[in-house]
Image 1 (cartoon, rainbow, N blue to C red):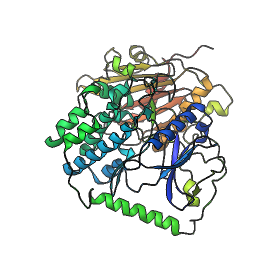
Image 2 (image 1 turned 120 degrees about the vertical axis):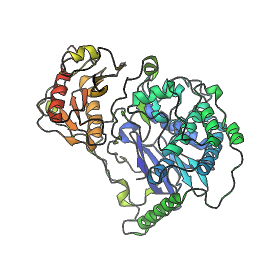
Image 3 (image 1 turned 90 degrees about the vertical axis):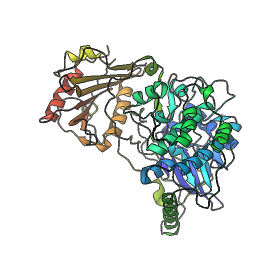
Length: 524
């Protein structure tokens, strides 16, 4: 397995001529959804329009198979995100070369009449001969005439990676090729700093910053700062085209080794792994295994996604003020376990028996599910409470009677309320409510359960809490909160973060229990 996300996975396979290929499969429970199957057909068509000089060339595909798949040439090389994470930020000369490669790749993609829409560090590979841009999974044709409607998921939602979206994408507005140029600018900042210039501590905060904030570019060298500023213009018309970018960047000197030594070490390690895989006893072609039970699809994540992320429309973010203090940092998302294909593919064979071993946490691994085990209907909540009303129930002092942050749609509602120490002028508590709503209460509870289980993977389970359907303590990863507790009850998740030296966990339990009281319950 080369990678996986919430909607699909990529496997290392071999074509009938023995050439290594990367095969992308839609997960089985999405393959039964005609909307996702239509999206996959668009991806196949889009990928075939672009040459392999700056992308991974398509070799074969079957979007109508029981498990739709797309086979492209296997491109050896680490992603930009992996290189920065492993070896640190890049030098100016390397970023200059990266920028030129990305501009050339976008010029080719746009020449084919496409907009990539999900340009991010994990979709950029650093290879021996330059840059490859991969994953046209949410690319759209510019001439489609329906760009204002994403057409990829439920109405009013957007798909992508919030930290690298353009403002117009974050607000679900019509997109042009200039949207990809904005994402390119964000990636160049990431190459110099290690993170997107808009990365916040929650998806909502990130989307707000993308739309409204002026990024800090002090870490970008003078030679590239002006170019990056133009790429990150809020007005799409003010951004340069990829061709203009190449003119601004000027010629790049040829080099035998284009990248830092770490890239070549990672390339060598990758080749060694493949050699071991192909020469070992397990290197016999095998058919895909029999299907496992399908997992419940995970809902949108509250943190920066590793793959396509479905997030709520940022039109609401744009119309409301950001949280006075950004909410707590969240753990990296953990994708649900992949589902093996249900039937044998007609063209490609897996190169090793171990490729399809499922990794991940089962949906029920971190939840108590008392309602489910007792056969009772799950708790169903209609909305999240306003902060002033919630304050009446919660024994915390020092908050102003105001709304910190509130966002709602037909399918999801959020509220975050912050308490401050008036003397030290620091926040001592944050309570957050998340409700999934609309439609069947049991289905909403299952969606909330799936996301909760994924978030709990890095946490410490709470047994015998006495309320709720499941709970976990967030692992130590921040100095801001002494303790942080998440509790799920049906379609509601309450998160409590406290700066409370002493009996913090006991206090967090009291606050979480009280936080359930002001939440409106559905009638009937």
